[in-house]
Length: 225
Image (cartoon, rainbow, N blue to C red; front, top):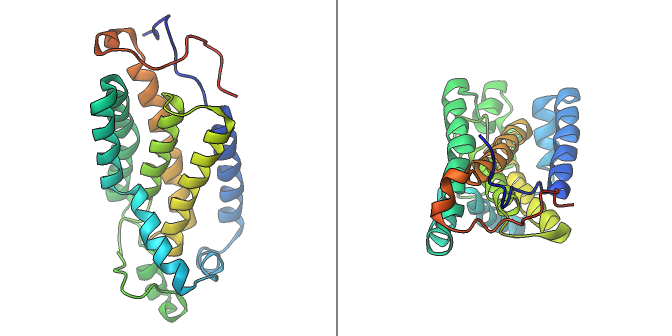
């Protein structure tokens, strides 16, 4: 299969380099640090004001965020919507499948089994899940939306790339802050989300979908810096 000669999905290189740095540092920390101690260290800055903000920001990675993005694309560009659908198939569905296949314990259950539940910082009134920790679905969604906006592209330039990376990373951090996931879970989710975004944009750019309308891609085949 070849991408239409009129356009091809640009690679958001600044976004991808930021992701690679996050993955490299994250994997190194996960590999060299005790799982429980790392989670407690990442959660040592709890504050009532931050609790509310984190509970709000984490919704940027839930199904409603995907639905809003899909509705906006339906009204604006059906081809972009197709790319997002492909992205969900490549990034979100594997995330759901891996959750059920691995069925790893979430922080609350993990610390309870260690006999250290009293050490876990909790956000008042927040319901914590116990199972299906790896990978993080909210993180996969956040990175899928950010990556797709850049790979389609709906946003351009280094500033947009770094801003969307920072926003996706913040959603990932909320999952750890709220003790719904471990760092390793959000790392895996971000990889799946970025992979889904790039794969979805590439598939929607195939010539067979030209009848759906303009792609919005640049005619230049070179990567976005």
